[in-house]
Length: 229
View 1 (spheres, one colour):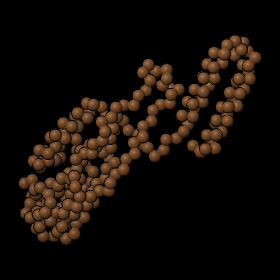
View 2 (cartoon, one colour):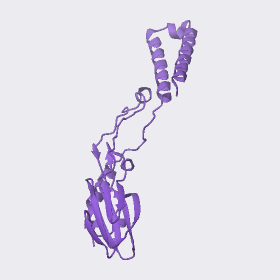
View 3 (cartoon, one colour):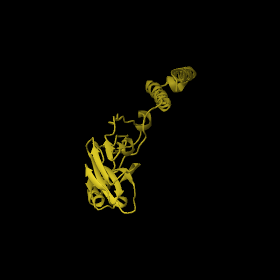
View 4 (spheres, one colour):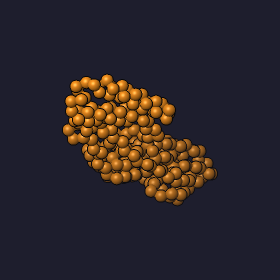
């Protein structure tokens, strides 16, 4: 909403309040007690604050729900089981994994050199009988959160390039996150039993990243990466 419209609403409220006060000035209701005047003015202030809070825009934010303690505990359990499942070649059966991106590259010859240019990414290679003359690459990750908010989708995949028989895994761009919390305005929370408090947080955790590569069964794999069969 533009500043002009906001000012218009404020002026409209002020004019309405002036008319309201003038109409009540001669009444017994407003003349009867100073406490009544204060209470009336306080209610009008709450009304103005509530209207302003509802019309001020919150732009460029990502709405999200907090993960519960049970969800966090379940994700931690899934993380502890992920290695054994991936190493066994059953990555499609792994729970708690998000498939981010996949690539296909032609393979000339029977040799594949893997170069990893970053860190904190695990590379697994599976040799598949049904695959011929190409390389398939998939990026998986476990969940990431900041202050109990799931931000898994905010992290991008690394860049994968293929030159001749060399597959290069380039690091993803760094992610900057600015966390701002919003709560309902005071006029809407002051009369609730417990008010409104920010949920407690558990800091930030970045998920595990897996680069899963499948190649023809007769491929000689060299360089970075762990061949699981």
